[in-house]
Image (cartoon, rainbow, N blue to C red):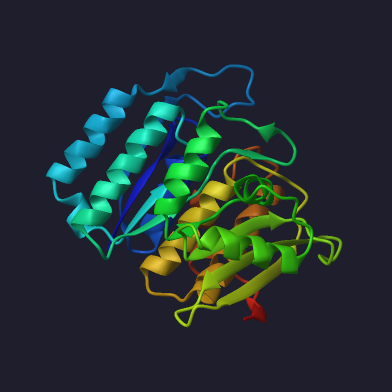
Length: 290
């Protein structure tokens, strides 16, 4: 089992591939990690070294892994933070080539664009490319609530609205949409909600939600880690509600461990057993069907 993961890489801390590779490997899945950035650390520290990679280098790396047979061997492509519009375009080209070569290959696009606290934190030419080129190629997308509202072009405050807007997005490409850090009118205080909406073979939709206690910290990279855990579950053959439950429960465990340690960066490596067998486990509950 192999996942091709295309996203940022840092030397210090846990975001992008530096958050995703170990959790995927922990579940017995090989990772072909292609960086879009090489940075000393994530933004938010007093200094940052390194840079977004030139598109020619990223394109060369993608061609190189194609030449080594990675596309034929892979079950999933995962993309995250891309760094530049040129890289976004090249990743779209790579995904289209890869899916043509390997029709069974799935693509998960984690549209790393921004969040509620900071707004958009990528260059202004990247979001339209993610929305209009990458998401239509995707089988799965994993936006946070802020990114989901951008992708669907509407304010979303209820579960019914999430399902309606997700259904409209699915008509343009992805079969499964997972909305993390959902902020909805019906979410109980002190809890965090993650929703999944999926196109059914019959033509309708199915939806599930997981609610977990909110841990009072917000380290960077939680979306990257969630996408990695969800992808690992799907590659291992879990159905969407089971992959959703596992990823949400594992994230909660990692955040609890991080809060106990009082560190800025997630304690991913020392939480290995939590990510493999999270306790408590929060169930994915069916919330709608049509």
